[in-house]
Image (cartoon, rainbow, N blue to C red):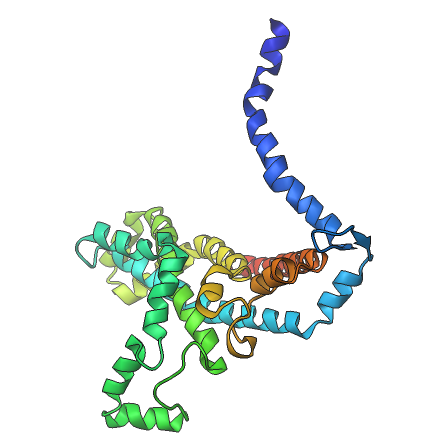
Length: 303
């Protein structure tokens, strides 16, 4: 009886560890093992050492996918957090009515299926009859808009999803719309932890809303900003669902929207180069770790 009691807790928690080993630890370790082999999923594995890593690090398509990923990440991360902090502050300070409705509305894009989101934005970015181009055509009669587009050498209709110059901004706009609500909830939760007494004291001292935001809210919100932005960096380095649905497996014209996660998927499952795909996965993992360490080192000094 004593032996059974001693082992009972391990029996109860064993399903988690069994499932984690089968669906978590084993794929990770097998992928590392596979990255040193050439394998198409059918024939026998052939050991090639670090050849897969050498190929990846000298592959121009891989570096183009890294450039695309970083470009999209930069274009979406900054607007996400600027909008999220501002909206969260407005909701927290009660500057609008129906706060519960707006919190739900902002969060809905995050829980919406990526396929549905991509279909909406395909209609939005469609050429020549998409909503954005239809709106733009209506604004062309205004001298300021027409002169601005002419100055930028942009012709209407804009091929948002086929012109390499607009593919990355289009994907970034979709990601900003989809994930801003998630960050709003994070910042809103962080603002709830700031004592109202601080705001009341600032109000008594005559602080304006602008001074309250920049002198009180932002400094006290920095630990939450660190967490939210770190999660954004990690997530944006793994962008996959939205661009592949919008642009196809090769990322559109001139592979302008081909992210590293898409290239990994295409290499492994499209071209059945599982060893090379595994090498791409681990190189991407190293890049994410390096980016996280750099961000952590810089941002932690400011907290």
